[in-house]
Amino acid sequence: MQRLLMKGDGAPLHDDDLLFSSGRLDSLDAVELIMSVETDYGINFSDLGFDLTRLDSISAIARLVEQSSVEPA
Image 1 (cartoon, helix red, strand yellow):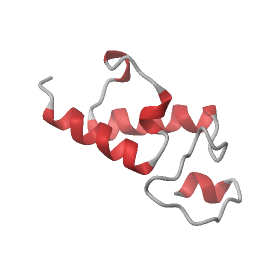
Image 2: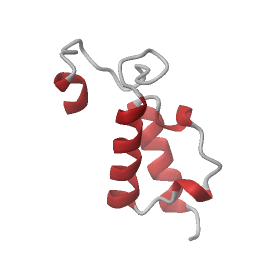
Image 3: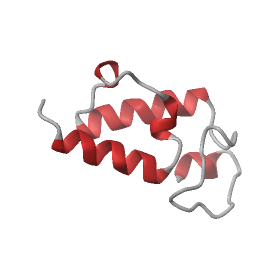
């Protein structure tokens, strides 16, 4: 993930590794990720009852995108 590399974090990243609760990413990164997901996938976080754990790993992000593409708008 480019954000991690920009922070000097070159450690391997696996799909279930925690991003925010581990401290690898911070609140500014969360805002940028939310904006990207909203723009790229049409997900409106204000409609979700948002919880940062829904973005805390690559697997969690993939589940969120998958669920949102299945649910009626």
